[in-house]
Amino acid sequence: MKIQRLQFDDHKEHWHLQETHLEAFNLLVGLSGVGKTLIIEVIKLIAQVATKNHYQLNGIEWKIRFTHEAQEYEWTLKSAIRATSPNDLLRLLNEQDSAPTQIVYEKIFNATTQEIIAERSKDFFYFKQENINPNLNKHESILTLFSEDETISVLKQAFQRVILSERETPQSRFSSSVDFNAITLKDFKETLTQVPLLVKAFFLQKFYQNDFTELKHYLISLFPSIGDLKVELTEDNHQQYNLLFRLFEKDIEHWIPQARMSSGMFRTLTHLIEMSLATAGSVIIIDEFENSLGINCMPDLVTFILSRAPDLQFIITSHHPYVINNIPWQTWKLVKRHKNRVTVTHAKEIPEFKDEESFFDKFIQLINHPDYRKGIL
Image (cartoon, rainbow, N blue to C red; front, top):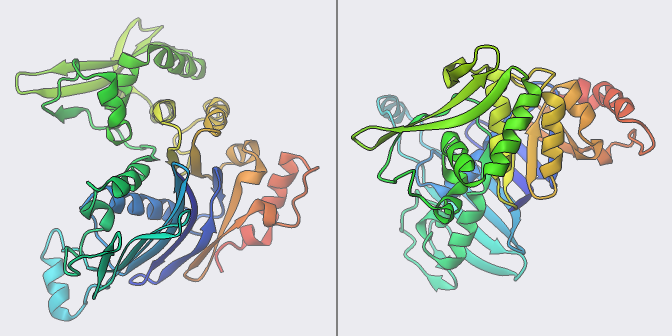
């Protein structure tokens, strides 16, 4: 999958993302508060609506164009705005999980074949040129309503390749009927992008030993005190599994638990695992790449990311001079906001940037550019 264009409106909160063109590698730059993280959250929400049936939509509208398996698609969706009368507001405040609003318009279009796969509004519902009951679950997207259909399942699989690199401590206990020791490589690959980070790490260690060894070497090069790394699996009598990273420290000469891993070390490990296991065509999303990372981690991680760039689409946000200055300027997307409207400008569209100038010169030009310095108008 590759996201090509994205447009988004939140009619309830009154903010709008102007049509944004994305490429294989996208480094979103700009002042804090201009809307970089909002763009990340938009993509996360769209992927959630495409793959799950629990989400909250309230006055949301989007149009996303993407390619997948040599076909180009466009998905448009608009939801109603929930009523906010005093009685409705009181009811919503007293409910832990408020009901989602209705989807009032949705269209899935194959731009390659010029075929409308599905389209619906309040009054009609067409699916593959057939009339469907327009009252069919108006709270759920076509991509999950018809997930068993061959065409729709392909689109759902595309959005399952959107990977948001984790920042928090991963879940370590799992209740499952699956025997972690018996699962096959084929089984693992079929659910690769949807399993938690520690599960990915465990199966990387089990099935891709060379890649896991390479990952350990990366980590050791960044943190010389580490001698080894493993993912430990334990199981109790109730099919409760516990997965845990353990590090072997050279000076201490024993294995230490995940809880003693530094935030920078964990964030580095997270990126390495996610990108090592990402299948070709995945979309890797990293918000504030530099968070928790020391400067000793950044060079190798930036190099590692760039090495995976030909196979994956990256959408990354960053403020850090090292990151911006060491990722090709042609990938920069300058984000700015005028009141409630967010716009994204490709660096190649900024006239001041010239090919013969160094990265450092372009970085200086970037941070001094009016659209950067006055990113919120």
